[in-house]
Image (cartoon, rainbow, N blue to C red; front, side, top):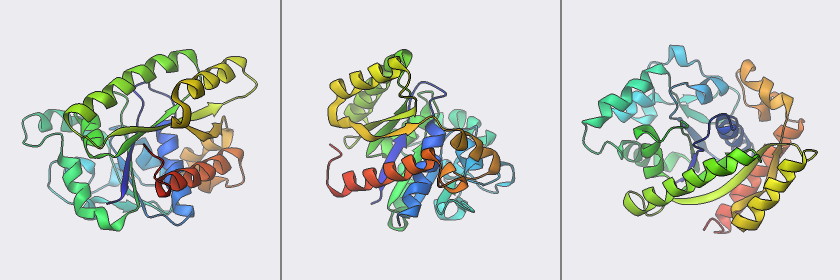
Length: 259
């Protein structure tokens, strides 16, 4: 089985999609076989990977309804070096359709199991709300990676997410755990951010990744060019940080240091 990680945070605008896309590209650059599953109806991870969500014949929506397999629906990221199971606005209707179906929270798990031999990592970009889509992601994942800004309100959102992970672990997926916290959009010149960072490290210890992703204009520009920042400008500080993060994640996986 590949290592399946949800990139999640119940607070919006914290860089979940940026993290998903650039981590995937970083992992691909160090030789890992990666699939992104875009579970957000906005389809930003799809577009940010260079795949046009408006022209997709099949999406994650069709996979959840079991009309097609991942092998039939996935698309290669033209420059990212990984595969994408894309999403578009159709996915917002999946919530209503899934409610009355059997195994409604395990459909993504079944689909990924069928494609498991082809990937080393599956990264699931979750919407900010706790919905049936997010539950499908959490039910099949081994763990959750939480990108977060080092700001006061981010700590409140983190508490909610940790409780959600505990509930899903207890009721739906005994493998699910909090893998780690990734500090993103970090500016060391801001005293509050440094204080929150220190609080995170003192409270969560090794659950805080060593890598810190700096605030970086090139990462923000990359989606408009339809490619991950890691590819758009590999020499930028943001790109270098994501490649470093990919290496740290692989080392943690190989060293069995995820628990």
